[in-house]
Image 1 (cartoon, one colour):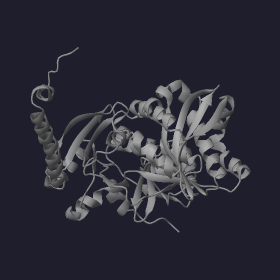
Image 2 (cartoon, one colour):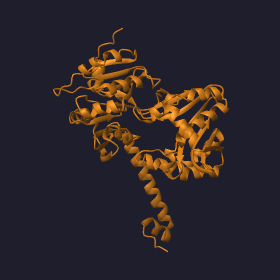
Image 3 (cartoon, one colour):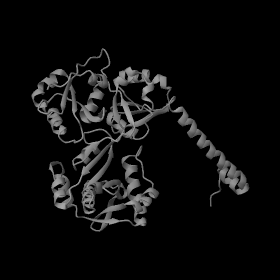
Image 4 (cartoon, one colour):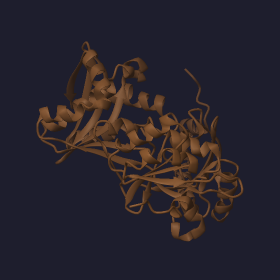
Length: 413
């Protein structure tokens, strides 16, 4: 049996009252540090620099989901290189310097009115997350017709060949097992830096408020599940889990199978809307792409924090990001997309295809060099949702995306 070595353990053995004082001291210290941190945040916000093989992100007051956001710019090998705090008055100069060096500054402005207007004009306002929902028909046959479409046919083929069976449970013991063996391992594997694991107590509390676990089995073996919540009018997709984060199971199509079964369950309950959850505001092969192919409509929750992204179009890294993963951002009450059009036939084809695949987007800003847009003018002009924005690249001065969009010529009638 080991001998206790910590001060708290030794105090517990010899002077219990000192152990209690020790605990009170550290509890008070944590509370004080949290209070001081909250008070300092508007003046000395936290900063983190993320680096990867493709670039560098400087994030200010962005903590939730920051590593995943940085990965779209830095690459999948993104990591936090440094952390600290920054004096808020020095932020504008740091933004200019980091962007000039080819990095991407992302700032959450807690009080935007305090910041210089010329700084705000440079940025685009990006919701941290976007919501997605799908309206439901009243009967299963209509649902099948709604779900089986071009982008989902491959998913349905995998589901048919997967030999899946389903069951629904509200057993607290199975919920606890799902949390420990399915949900927590999956988030730790897929989002090691910033995946939020819903506490098992929260799941158990939701059992009395419409919560239920939809399980997928293969040959009678429980391999995956999703904890959903049935509300009065809607059905919410919640926490997903795959046993031991087994990648081979995921590749068999269990996520698509769970989504389809959740749609069916919502119709069985007579509900008229399914909430597909929240996603980061990037297109390309992202979770937004996956959810919209099931009929998801992109919307904006005004309670979600907003980020100011300072994108300097002079740099190849920023243009690459906008080309590979077009960015959803806010324009007034609407959601719009900005993308960079690279030369060639395929980028034009992909852009025109994507414009019709993401409902909820007001219009698309297609940026590109003048000769690239001119070559694609006939095809791009076929869609009223596309706004062409020519950009003449130059190293002489910054080309901020926010200022570029503000100065654009209005589309021809």
